[in-house]
Length: 148
Length: 148
Length: 83
Length: 83
Image 1 (cartoon, chains in turn cyan, red, purple, yellow):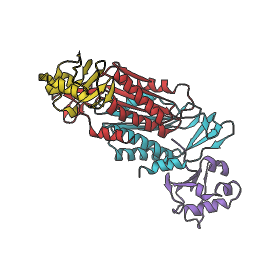
Image 2: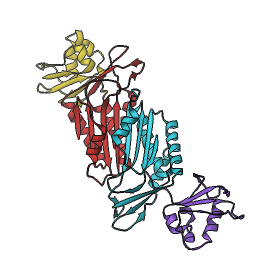
Image 3: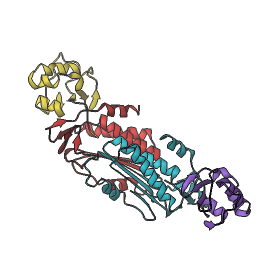
Image 4: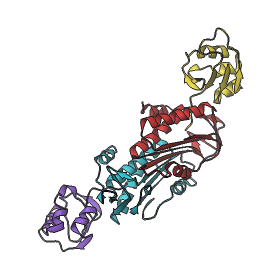
């Protein structure tokens, strides 16, 4: 299940929704990305997430389908927010459920790596040094390259 | 923070408690292990977890300290239940928070691997084929060996 | 042809989307970048380092040498930073 | 000396814990296993495959050749299966 939304999400409720009634599940992995109050050498007071409506939903659905092709999952959830966020706020949630823990861990990690390098979102940070578009990190490309 | 308990836990509440007020966190990884309704070729109706009171708490504290030595974490939570459980029930919860997602993912995966091979718990499954002590898996030893 | 701009590409062009009629001599995404740059000003600035601009054609990532047609939706943006 | 048994080791010995006075000729955990096995019955069965029995001395994992003393807490159990 994928969602692109302005509103916050409830991590516990999403985990419960994904596992509900499925006693074939042996493990559920989740990852929440949150807004940090520091970026490189600047403080962050606001992070604004811009995205490409239409393409975002397509990209997320493709990324989720790819994870489900690579691992045997009982289910997966990807929620990505956009709009104006502040330190401590949730940005993104990935939840994966599987009969086996390694599949749940790997698929969750894979989904996060792919979101970082494939999902059309852009982060604009504002703080003590003025607005700054976050630059893509080569470490994220490296992380994604692990899965090829 | 470690807990060994009979009662269930609230995943969402534990995640919120770990992150509360810390805006230096960039990612929170969690893993919940749950009771499956099948084990190898037998159905499972009850899983009873026995543990070594005293040593369990020491082992969990050591495992958590080791994770915090290897990765820079903002915090970690390990909760392991004992007693009589049923399919779909929570067994174990690990939550790790860090400024960086890779540290959160790796520490969470490390903690689960170590719990599987170091924490003094034993699972007795009962179902259509009668009671059976779960055997240790060499795949769990292999998973733990990754971290040496 | 519908063209969309995101993040600092949008800030530099000063526009988030526009409709253009594709000129006959524009065959690829890179040709289109060249044609847009000729408008000067913010456009020239946005595309001054072409390697830092990503392209999507009809909401799929595309290389700069991919052909474009007048019915396509083209988007230009920096490397993504979501997640 | 306090001895604890867990899981199927406990089921086979039929007892979860007991206090014994350490015999003079028992120097190591393995010696203790040998001495307990001599009791026969469930004890012999529990320790029939010594490689499948793990040992903890004072709540720390220990090899079978580790020395034991009369003030130790010794535990015998199968490989753990938690998590």
